Length: 217
Image 1 (cartoon, rainbow, N blue to C red):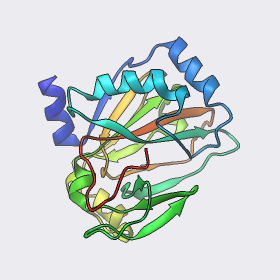
Image 2 (image 1 turned 90 degrees about the vertical axis):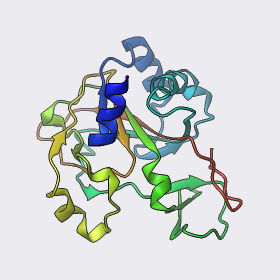
Image 3 (image 1 turned 120 degrees about the horizontal axis):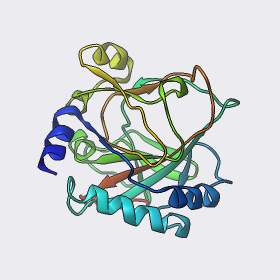
């Protein structure tokens, strides 16, 4: 596990093969089947209880005391085969807006307040992506810029910044889990041979917020 922690800190990403078995994936997909692609799912939703317990146990050795603070459901299909350019995930979901030093700008997404926190908080977070379906090179896996998680990058400079780092395609089989340092630069192309690509993405953090701010979940 020490080697995993070192790899995660060096590259900003780590593959955990076979993190979930087929029956657990089927139950999760059935429970979230009506959720809109890209929608936030409450981490308190009973449908996530089984899988979040398993993911927390996997994350614990590399990020002690971390808990799930946001979950998103992605469902890329031949009819919804989108492209995502190079970017960093820069916002967190909070319960309500409060003025706090270093937090901003603010936005509201799907009725929930989101804000960009100080970079040090993002750098301490982990994002995990549990693959419900196989994701070979033809089905638009995430591409990450290894090592870019240490640098805050302006949105307009994301593509040029990614060129400074070695890049990696995050191929996956159903049940695999990729763990990322949340601010790692990443992108996703359109699938060349599109088929369903369902992913549960969960943000984890061990820190509490301050200045009266609370995690949305």
